[in-house]
Length: 80
Image 1 (cartoon, rainbow, N blue to C red):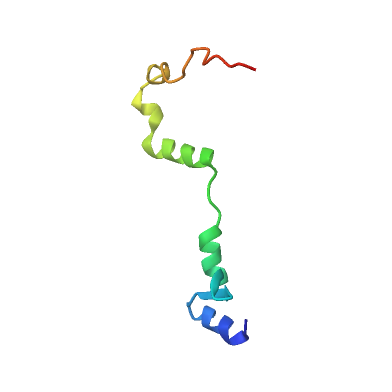
Image 2 (tube, rainbow, N blue to C red):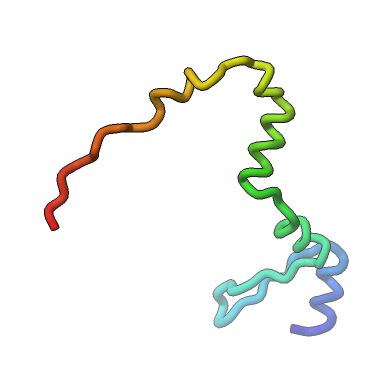
């Protein structure tokens, strides 16, 4: 890859890198890479954010909603 190609990338164009005519990689700016791979909340953090936004505790749904969600049967027979 040439310096000219990296200059194109800094102007906002993605550069496709090929090997024997087949695409193998894409060169993007550091800002675009950060946007793609940037910090994301964990599943638990995202869940807590949603709960805070919806104020789930004020819905007063209690544990009744969740009582029958878990299967309590012993499961299938397994031959070992």
